[in-house]
Image 1 (cartoon, one colour):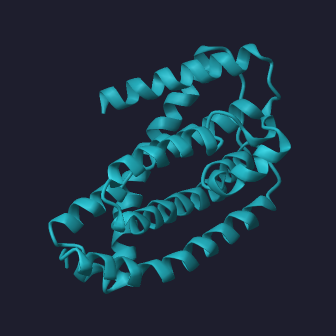
Image 2 (cartoon, helix red, strand yellow):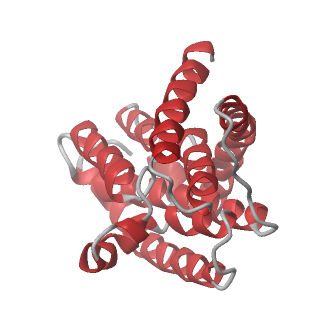
Image 3 (cartoon, one colour):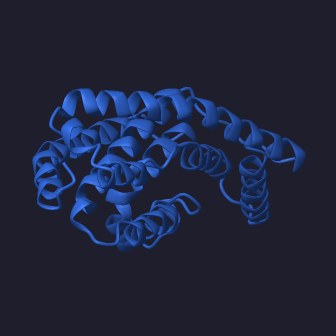
Length: 221
């Protein structure tokens, strides 16, 4: 935990120092505060699913998707509610120590709650998609890089060229939308987050039987 918070401190100091020196718009520091708290506070659990699949423990659970998702979300939420307040507290301390100012809107909590749900669904969707892969860990590194660089964690979409922003919008939904609303963006964007949640739920409904079939073919059921 000490190493984790130390790394978090370094990330915040670098980001806030950089954006503070560029005289960025007032909402940017609040955006980075929310985005980093969300990004660094949520657990990466898709790798655990692959380990359970290799041990032959996952197939039966996938056959009962609703209890499976509910239990996974409980574990995910328990870890998240411990880590996100710590990350946010580190960010607030850095803002104060650097003499900067940042604020979050009244929509911060519902926006971040939707961000947590979106990220959970992304992790689960990615895990089910990679069950047919022979190198899931390599794909996991790719996902992490895409989320960090293309997910608008360190650079809000407003600073991308217009075409690039449109291409990144699906990936950025998990971090960009909740962080932008939390930093003072239009609350109507919460509806966009809800739409993305519905998209992920639709994907999962199709992916569960396919993932179970893939595990059966590999003899991991």
